[in-house]
Amino acid sequence: MKYQVGDKILVLYSNEEGEVLDIISDTMVLVEVRGVKFPIYTDQIDFPYFKRFTEKKPEVKKSRQYVDSIKRETKNTPYKVGEGVWLVFFPVFDKDVFDDDIIEKFRLYLVNQTGYAFQFSYEMSFNGISDFSIKSEAGQHSDFYLNDLAFENLNDVPKFWFEFSLTTPDKKKAPHYETFFKPRAKQVFKNVEEMHLKQEAFFSVLLFEEYPDSVDENKPDLSKLVQAGFKVQDSSKNNIRTVIDLHIEKLTDRWEKMSNGEKLELQLKTFEKYYDLALQNHQHMMIIVHGVGTGKLRNEIHEILRHKKEVKSFVNQFHPSFGYGATEIYFNH
Image (cartoon, rainbow, N blue to C red; front, side, top):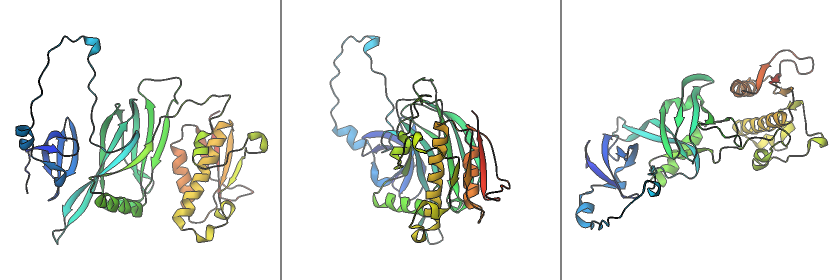
């Protein structure tokens, strides 16, 4: 191994110096640069001594400075992500019996690349059962280590749920924002393959690009639905619906050519669409018809509803029109 724990290193793409904290594998190490810890491939770093001997020291021109004119130092994170708040997956490698590199686990980081500081709640669950949760703060342009995800747990239907609120409240911004990421194992494997092809040390998922504005009580904000591709009509044209039927044949004509995963994704998107519309139109209740079947769609909807602050209660009981294939939702209005 070229590097050892404690070696000083130079990150080639950012030209910043750091230190080796741990040896992850033959091709990857854990380093610290300006207080930020992250794994990186060894071909993306070098020893800094050649740089130190060859570069000329700039001349220091002394001048009087005033406190108001001194620029505040901004933290330069090494993550190659754009504006917004991201969930970042760093793979940690181990050796198998054939001495090949295999992914042992993922280290999960919350990366805030916005000008806002957030209070947040985070929960990781498997098969609908909570496994880990924390509440903390993510400063502006900073990163926060969340927890580790064992590679074998990808088959246990992991879900990462977040709730954000501004550390400094702003009347123009929403009081809170909820989002979640629920990957399929196949999707994660594809992300890992793309990561290797691009010779990157991690892959990331965008949680949100901009923290949402507050909603005017008299003027519902339907921009999120429009951006998601839904056709939104005025409520005067019977757009308000109390009963939402999620049977797949009611939603698309091409349902026979869709996989089970694609069907479930469309059903959940439709549920979210009409859930948001119900809130915008101050409905007191709504009924979601999901059918009986295996209970997969029902369980997914119930799991989402448990995290919704606007929900007063929900119940899946016998209904004269839908049997046990519907859930009644009552809102806090």
